[in-house]
Length: 274
Image (cartoon, rainbow, N blue to C red; front, side, top):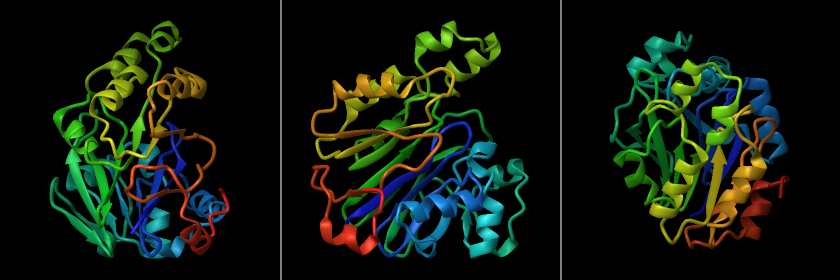
């Protein structure tokens, strides 16, 4: 069975990633409003009713601002660590809160979600992989360093959302104060284009069909820079740059290492973005 993935928004103004198998789906983070989430899913031909859970990576506002309303309206369980919940100040109905721990596999219908620790300046940050049968998708954003946790999981992925937050030269020459530049480029901040490319070229598995470059800085990066940088090393992997203003297309990940579209599944899901 294939997985279908889309970025609904990606950037410091909000992050929300959709992963589903055609029957059920999960959202990784919900950093845009409930109304905007619904609007973007509808434009992409995705049904909100297929979403069965929300997983929260950490407590920063651009990852949680839509959680409370989405969870209440659709009675969605929110998987969140106690440390993240405590620091988030989210108002979630008690019966919708489900704590999770790193490396404890969570089953949501036909999906298996695995969380693992990451380096970021938050209380208890985690990244995730989502699998269905033999297909795995990783969500690797807000990462200060490509630690062993990241590289081990990246090697397993047929597709990935990978942070490429800033261009080193643009950040250095930009108007941000020194302390913010240090925070971004430090070991608990964000991945640069070069760091993301190094992870991709060094640890990409031969079966990775799609790479969605995510969480680009508005002030310290340009989509054209990132696209050009990765295109030269792409091989058989389709390179997509996620937008901070709109949803991506919905991409089918079928596990065979080729970025192709399954026509039957496309019609079934009414993927209007193709």
